[in-house]
Image (cartoon, rainbow over all chains, first blue to last red; front, side, top):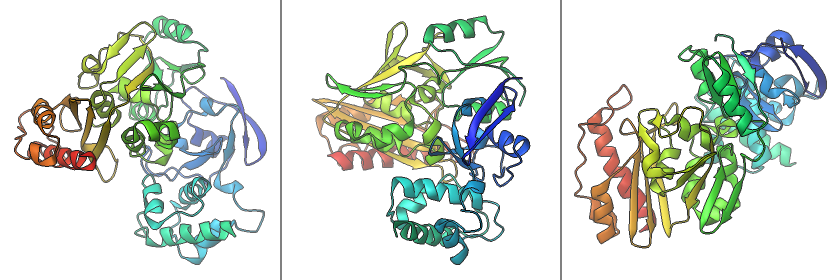
Length: 155
Length: 264
């Protein structure tokens, strides 16, 4: 089996994969980073969103071999120790989650959105969430959380 | 998904060789359609030939009255390109409407048009602008490229290297997206260059097509009113759980008039 190496949340990792191994499988099953969720397995729900070389991707629609040598950020790498990231704080404060299943993908999507557009409008946030499904909240509080998280990140 | 050999050639020639040498080989560009298809076992290739390590296939250049977009250029790169926004804003707008941000970060122009999904957005721009599809061996006019449902004029193993979009006087793309997938239930791309008008419709039929009656009416008078009387037959249009053929026929008229109104 081919061997791959990449940097995940700042740490160098290596592992063996098959051709068909998805990046999300490598993260969850090989590295034990189960914060990245598999919701639909049809590449529609966005629960598996991570950052690959600085941009958001669905890790269930990327082969692990395509991430060889890459820089990966998962939800486990977002907080600073016990201190939540300002975007995570905003999700907590605005009740931007209920069951929490979609939340890792939502937070990583929000961070990618704000990196591109530090002061987004309500409409831009909603357009940016088109690849992330939440079946609990109706999105309203997620949008509030992202707008506030962006504000906190602007300082 | 079934396992396969993963091959990552460093040149287009090596990619063609790898595909030719495979029992049942499949090119992969951004993988945003192919990987879900593999997971559903709708395709079970023995070899996946990944195109991402071939140099020179990604990039955008505006020169000689054309926007030249490399086949491996992502939708996100086209949507964010200042050069594309200046030259053909409708093209950047269309790229920004494909799928969702994560799909746009991986999905590519070449992958989209080689797959020729009947509800894909890019075929409407390629046909609606009268673009030229460039491969390793030849140039294919948009009018000859999209041949049928998921079928193109590409030969086995032929690789799209870039698409040259001529810069029009004005163009617009309006789509009625599926609310879940953002694929086009109907999308209409209208362009005007000199006296020539092109109207390309995606999502409605088995394959992107030009609407000749609308083109003739708009060539005589470029206004939404000029095409208000054009009747769209539902006969050959798609009829599925997302929309009936009659509804799609209606949407073709609505989307076309909105696109024309944007630039008239």
